[in-house]
Image 1: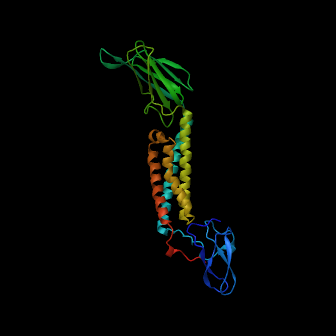
Image 2: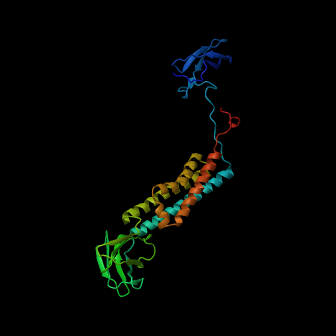
Image 3: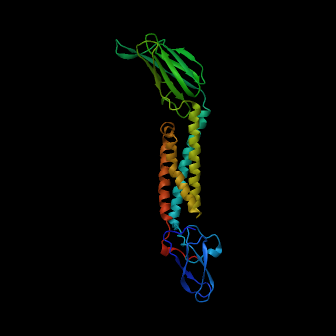
Amino acid sequence: MDLPLNHSPYLPLRCPSCGLEHWAFVGPWPSRTSWSHCPRCGAFIPAVVPGNLPPLFSWEVHPGLYPVPRWPRRPSARLRKALARALILAGSLLLVAAGAFGWVGGASATAPPQAVGGVVLGFNASQARWVPMASAVVALTGATTGPNVTDTNALGRFLFHGVSGGVHDVEASAPGYQEEILAVFLSQGYDSPSGNMTSLSLQLVPGPANQSRVISYIQYPDLETYLAFVFSATVLEGMAGALAVGGGIALWRRRSPARSVVAASAATLSPFLMAIAGFGTLFLTVLPETMFLVGGAGLLGAVTVVILLWALRPLGREEIPAVP
């Protein structure tokens, strides 16, 4: 067996029969345990060569050979309950955010058809202003909606009924003007552009009819991708919230502090995981209020894990309880 570089060939031994303490020579033999004779009574004494691994058998144990484990501290009852309350509060915030996302996803998946409308404006060069375009052709197309064509009225307004959720293109055209395509997204919890979907505005500029301008407000390519993001956020926040609440209850009941550290880490990492996974648009567009909930839960989790690691620091050598 390879010995440590700082290993001395002499080991302190104590005879288990007569109690004589002496030094014995131990060479670099492959065996972990060598045997020495007591100079006083002649009894055999096991001499264990120091190694990196703990002894494999009980008869290899020698008093003082391996260091005494440094036991972790225990937080006081007052600090423990305060940290437990912080963890339960952080988990509750995450669960509220998960419930909000779940409600939005369920409402979007079962949303009834909506109305899409607005006004078509054309630029009048002689008057140098935008005026309503009467008799402009407006077409609505989408993945789940066939082509639907209508003309604007005298006020330049148009309206489509029974439009399902998802991505749709609103195309406006008129003779002597460039075609304009407005890409919109419809759902129960998030519409793009934000606001009333019956107040869209399409502006036509003079030019060849075979040229078109595309204006897109799309954050998600289709309704299925949007729902996948929403429900994935629900699952992630729900799991982090359940872990945080469970860790807080375990800490309140004086269970293993390791569970509390894991729970606080889950609450801390939840906002970062959401940002890395690309869920930032959900916080900014779908439910901006949840950003404060998840951020507050992450802050509570970070403070809790720091205080827990400080409270559970190892005891000093003089504070280690006696091992029987």
